Structure formats: C-alpha cells, structure tokens
Length: 454
Image (cartoon, rainbow, N blue to C red; front, side, top):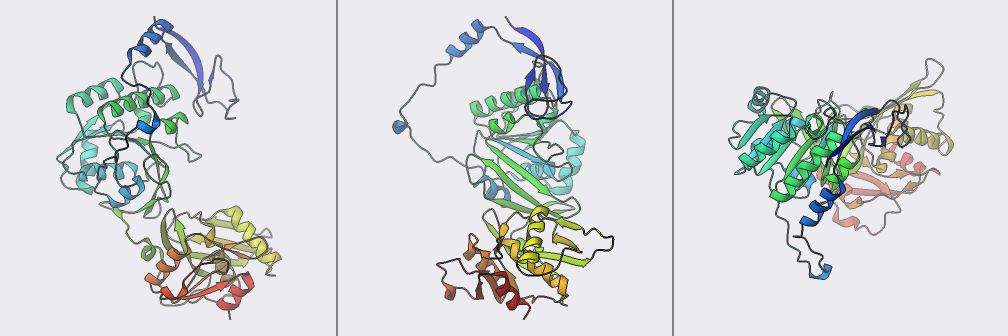
C-alpha cells in the first residue's frame, strides 16, 4: 500500500531533510528548503514490479553486437554539428540558457524545418496562438508540427499515445507537473518525476525528445543535478542579449564530442547559421586604431579570428579600474602583473578596459598574447598592422607557451588574407612551406613586442 509523508527538499541540490532548516548542509544555500509530499510504495508491491521485468538478461560484453546509431537530420547544420551529426532516436536533449536568449526560437525553428517527421511541440509557457505568431515570423510552413499547450504530465503522455510523434519538444520542463507528486511545478520532486516519465517513454518508443530548461542566477541549469545525469545531451545556449551572436555549446553528449560549438546570428526572422564566424567577428576599418589586435582562437573544434580591444588611460579617481567583457578578469589581472614585472611597463596607476568584439566570451588561453599586445598598443598609442594576427599563451615568467591546433589557426588566418601570424616558438613539427602566410615564431614577450612595435 502506498504511504505518504512530508519532507523538506532543497530546491538547489535536492537534499532531503525531515524538518525545515535555514541553511542546506550539502550546497550551503540559505532558505532553499520547501515542504513536499512524498509517496512511497510498499516493499511487496515494489519487489513484485521489479521481478516482473525479465526481458533484459545479462550478456557477455564480447557477444554484444554494435550497430551504427541512425541520426535524424535537423536541417540545421550548426545544431547537427554540436549534436555529433544529428539526433539519435530515443535520446533526451536538454537545452538551457538565459531568459530571452532564443532557446524557444532555436527549437521551434528546428521543429518547423524537420522534413517528413511528425513533431509534437508541447508548450507550458505560451498559448498556441503565441507559438503561431512566432512560427509565421521565423519560417513558413511546418505542416508536420503539432502544437499543444499543456502542463499536466499525464495529459502529455496521452497526447504522445494518440499522436505517435517522431519528435517531442517540451518547453519547458520546469512548467510540467505530475499528479503523483504533491508539490509545485518546478520543484525538485516534480522535475525528477516528469523527466523520469519522459525518459521511460523515449526509451520504449525510441522517441527523440528535446527539453528546454531554465537556468538559475549562477548560470547553471535550474533543478536538481540528477536532471543532467538523466538526459543524454546537455546543450548550453549563451550570448549577450545586447548583441546578435549566440553560441551553442555541448556540455554533455553521450553520442558525440563535447568540443563542438555552433554559432548563430539573431535576426528579425529567427536564427541564422554562421558558417564563417571570423568575417563577422572582425571589424573592417579603413584607418588604423590603437588598442586593437587580432587573435587566432579555437572554440571547441572550430578556429576563428576575433578582435581584442583594449583601452588604457590614467586613473582619474586614484584607484585604478580593471574591467573586462568576454575575458576572465582574474586572468587579465595576471597578464597585467606579468607586463609590470617581466616587461617593465608601469600599468599599476592606469585604468585598463578590455573587450572581446562581437559580445562573445572566449576561454581559450591562446588569446593571451593578443590581449597584452592590445593593452600595450593602447598604452603607447601605436596601432598594430591590420595584416598581422597572433596566437600564444603567456606564462608567469613572460614566456610564450605553445598552444593546441596551431595548424588550424594558421590556416584560418591564411584563408582570411592575413599576411603574417606570430606563434610560439615551442610549437614543433610545423611545415612552414605549406601555408601561404608568413609565420614568425617567438619565445618571449620582448621578441613579440619588437616585431609588432618596431
């Protein structure tokens, strides 16, 4: 017989407590415990249900046959790239991102373009009329896309049974609730139960499912951490809402690489795939400007050139300011200390502002050399050549450390018409003759500065 009891569950990490406490002992967050009703099944019925399933039997690993998983083409090359070649039948894909970043637009645009497959789009946040208005704006057609506004898990399962779709979209998982759990939608218990129900249906019917999830103020996916463990793919859709570029990153992927990224441009009629991001992330000015350098970066498996902008000015209020957009502020402080100690540039009493053009955030350490070059260019007010790009990681002793995938960086610079690229000297095994670009290798900051500011 089913028994119910009341427990307190942390809405941040899912830790349970028999009574309310102010601070969670597991994650350290305050005032996150909410009372929820938990229904427990008796041991006899649970054991009976467990032993009824005899279809799966242990098998020797050497006798297991491997077959190529068929992929479903989403008609979106950037999305297919991040997924590893398309959607795998029976997989759960979780898409997270900030409010208004374009998660629903991305998924709806994909659902409207999937050919010869029936798509069931379940929305718990918008009415069918609102979805229709967005669909008319981003894509004409979508005859195979069925839309329903529903928040009950039991009714959604009924729609799946009646419609038998080839693809299921749930927007968003935080708005879905089950009658078996006596708690509010978005709670830990509701998210866990609803995701588990969708997971069972997806595996039984070999149905690919896309779940849209919210994120919390720290930038991680809202809900319990078990949500990310249950799904097969976790995608993060990020970008600055004040800029037009969006990046789709793969945080977890059981069917492909997590090193791939997809780049999109937000337009009035939806998201446009950016095939060559280097041309969009570079500014084309006729006049030379100080404080600007070009870095050959790698995001995931894709090389592209980005523009690094720096502004160095005298501190007007006594305490120097350090501001960074799109680059780690702590790493910027480290590079300023290296310039002060190893290169002899007095920047301790000056304001330093750094910006990565295009509104994107780059974590590649190979743009260190471009950052210090842009800072020095602004400090002495001397512009760098527009035909030169750099790639290199700066160490604490002022050395230029080697970077990965150097051949891809050189090839991207040559493709865009750059005449010279400065790379670390310790990158060995390069065939310099096969590239149609002048390659200069340096080992210290002083060597790079002499070349650029001679």
